[in-house]
Amino acid sequence: MGTIHYIAPEQAMGQELDGRADLYALGVMLYQLTTGKLPFEADDPLAVITQHLHAPVVPPRAKNHAIPPALDALIVQLMGKKPQDRPASAAGVRAALESLGSGQVARTPDLVAYRELSLLDRIVRGQMVDRKRELEEARTFWQRARNGEGQVLLISGEPGIGKTRFVREITTLSKSPRERF
Image (cartoon, rainbow, N blue to C red; front, side):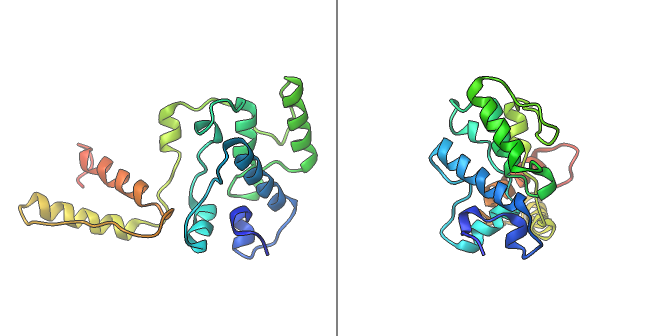
């Protein structure tokens, strides 16, 4: 069992757990401590779980520029969707956190080196997950509208399920000269 806002993806899926599920929860706590907000929020618990499973985490530094880049990278790594993407041990995380206080960056093999993401990289980090049917429906509506048949596409749903990302994907495809959306 776990608290909905701190639950690791593998825990939500009922998979086998190890200490990296706790490291995920630590990442959520560090995120909340550094930004004042939880990384994933919604009115519906299922929407929160869906975000833990599929939504890319917005780097905390995007919400609080005072966060040191190395701490930002550590938090993002702690919140990796797959356990193997997270640090292998709490000892490595502890060393990284201690090194932040000393101004040195820990060089442990299981921690990813910090790399500043450009604005474009931060925007495109998200991936569309399992939206082929919805994209095909939007494509049909778009083609009907282009042929002069009046069409309206209304996108609705619970917070945190990817509506904004879906609209961005549709907009990008509709403007692309290569894509016959």
